[in-house]
Image (cartoon, rainbow, N blue to C red; front, side, top):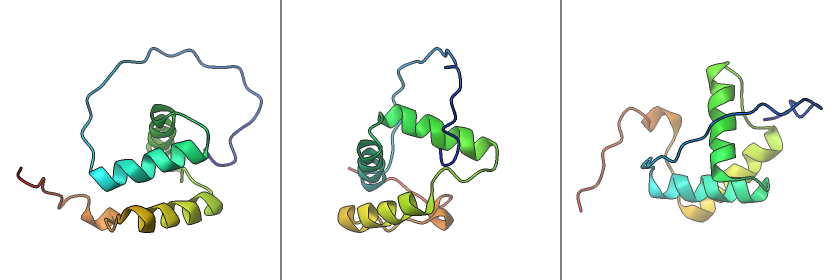
Amino acid sequence: MADEKKEREPVEVERVQTGVRLEKRMLKVLKAVAEQKDMTLGDLLEGIVLHAFEGKAPFSQQTLKEIEQFKVLYGMTLRASDSHNLKERRR
C-alpha cells in the first residue's frame, strides 16, 4: 500500500463474505489502522495480502509507528515469531 498509489484504472473483482476468526486485539489494531486510512477492513486485508504475496512490505514507516501506538493502546503483544504457536483459549 505504500508508494503504489499511482493513477491506474480500477481492477474489477468479485468479493465474497467470509467468517474468518482473528485474535481479538489484532482485530482491534487492524480496525484502527483501516479507520486511520479511511478504508474498510476488507480493503486493508486485501492490500496486506497482495503485498505479502509479492514479498513487499505493506506499510510505510509512519504507518508502522501508528500501528505500534495502536498495539500499545489495545494491549497487543503478539509478534511474527508467535504466529506458529497460537492456541485458542478455551471458553
